[in-house]
Length: 402
Image (cartoon, rainbow, N blue to C red; front, top):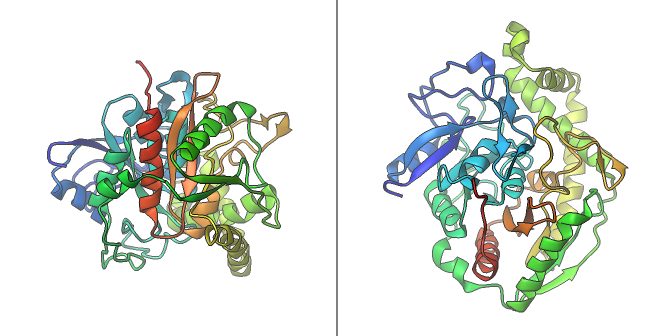
């Protein structure tokens, strides 16, 4: 990557540079350390030209904070770029940089990648070391948090992944990676592969306008020799139950990581993060451990299908980009929804650690991007890049004219 310009999310520390975490409390904070991925990116010769905007501590699926304000979508400046890696997605889509780093604890790479029309990959948990916090080496499991690449092409995303990945002793969950050349393997196509497709996982609301580009992408995969079957999902719990137990994990993590600072500087925290910390502190140890059983339901259901299919295809989110002044829509297809959560179909794979990718597949009638989400069994990330490369080769990826 010698000479390649890259941007890093402002949740990711860079030694000697300002890292704000999207919080006024850290507005002038200069990092004295950096995670392994940053060192690897430097050693590969890439030029870190800037940090990208993120919501405070990456706590939601849109990007705005009290330091930099909102990140707007380059396709339509009245719309959100999504989050929490919204700054990275907007920087890539608008051609500020060809490639950027993001992190994903509930969809934070895939959501903005879909809304901005770029490639965004959440690797198998452990494939890329996540050692950003020397004070809590085990904090990445509630839920699974991942670093990953965001780019305008499949090849660029594969290149950045190849630089970041690999075993690192400072991360207790880091694992040796398979011996493979992603840049070559992604060219192998999808002939003979068997994919499952779901519009909603039997859980999520969605707008009809996103289906056209998704169905066109599925037709292209079939033309390239893949078998794609539409299947039903039955998790045995509704969306409210899913979001409830997922939020418990998130809120407990925020309370653990930032509770001491919150007690000392409560006015420096936004109302939404304050509420999450307060909720996390009210959880008992038993309540938190009970989430493991719900998480197991998600794992068993997804893995059952991945034992039969090579990949699961779905929307990334149930909507196109909405106003940057809100956290999400109040209704989807006439159904009342929770704005902060119900429109994103990404949390499932943060419960399990499976790899997942957002692939741009065109625009809805509104002219806004739509992303196809693909997920495979663990350590089969190479198939995700084969799917993405196939669609890129046959359909092409397009970006806003700004």
